[in-house]
Length: 475
Image (cartoon, rainbow, N blue to C red; front, side, top):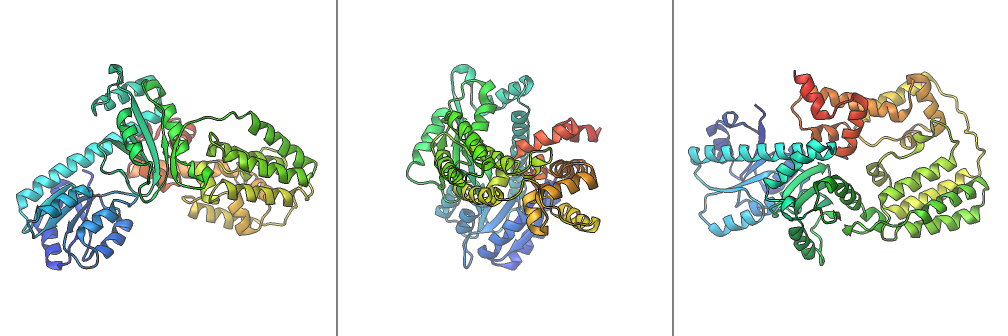
């Protein structure tokens, strides 16, 4: 039986020890992973340990239990809070529940009360885990069978599109769960992304409250259109996820709705950039860089367009061959890790264009040795969970990017991108086979912040979805 982790916070050490030894945690599917004796210490430990449940006292020096719950609700992994106190002060209980606490208990502890509470907590945690895993997988599969299961899952939460009730969703780029108070379907779909599904009327009511101020820690909220057909759910999710990154385009946090722009102008601008680079027309190149910078910040353009501009520009700047893709950023997360916003990206592209357009088209060969390459390969294996690109490797090891791409083809028989993908997917297979970690957790552990991109790559390499692979290995 999988166990959920518990963290205990109380400024009296004897209370902590008493709770640890008086409860048979394993019997109910839990284990105590740590303790703290004040709120500040507890908050730091919670960031590191990511417990599923936190038992906390109310009255503590430095940071009390209510403040701990409020701060804890901003963590990337939100625990269930159980407030305990020696004071029968129901005002505290009410405030604790408003802040997101699951339950409130009085000291001294009653064994039967704790046992019943743990049973309820485990049932809730199991339901949330299974629901999230199932819905994420179904949305990723996007076939007729999965749509029927999504329909049943939504109807179990009161959403009936067949009865004329429209749904809506929003994807939030944020730390923690800023909408923990909402009674909606919530799924963590990435390290810093939350998906919320609800009735469309409820969604509009939520958005109207955000017009004046966004919750702390929110960078972007992408909003779907009206969803009145299960068949468009995946497409609307794709749109909302794209829009949750729109702060990268505008340079500020906000709520963003889908409003597609005509790509004709952008396509023609790409062609002009290619011609300017080929002709080494630096004046035209500067003007076009300014033009496209302003264009991408207009309503309707998304990070998808920014990524395309980045890769198209690099394809013009380097020799076009099968290794060219190695200089390109392959995903939105990489782009946002590399640049603060689209304006910073455009400044970089312009300076790179000016620099490389003055060079001969062939790359400058450098002497290298297998030992050097093996050092690079060792670094890749030790750091594949983080963002590694050809660009970052060339900066670290001072090797021309095209030459490094050729080294990968020569030494390991495949491109850098292919090698990184297989390395990550192979390690994901090991984790699926050897651990009980959730698929979303495994995706993050092998370097993928976008769950849906991970599942696509996994299926491309193995021929199965992560869930199918795990089920097959269990037989």
